[in-house]
Length: 151
Image (cartoon, rainbow, N blue to C red; front, side):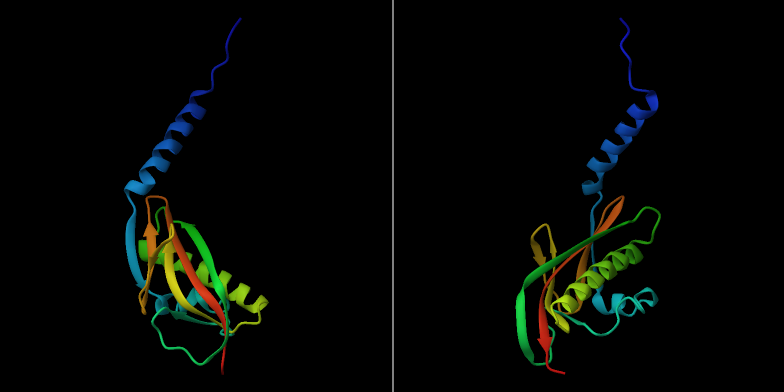
């Protein structure tokens, strides 16, 4: 009776995948980037339509008419071969789009008290959000409240 072995390619692929997964955390870099830089990106035009405004924790907001519970948006992007700042801004833009879309379904016109919330660790700054950039991925997790603001 002859036993079949996995082709060398599959064994090599499994080894590379395990190495990449184990080394991703070892290479994590924490970056702090102004949220305004994401909102002002050319790529944000048309995706962030201005019907929902974003306020980091510590920023002054217009009068709050109603407020919801916390919500979290966790987005990642492939960072291989990309500038780390651009990869982080791209992931943050995806998180803001998700928050904007959910706000619209709740008839909210703002998201306030936004903090970075990576693996349930809070980073709060009135200017910057936090991005975790590994060897393969950039990740941004934003947590905030949907609000109806006075206009």
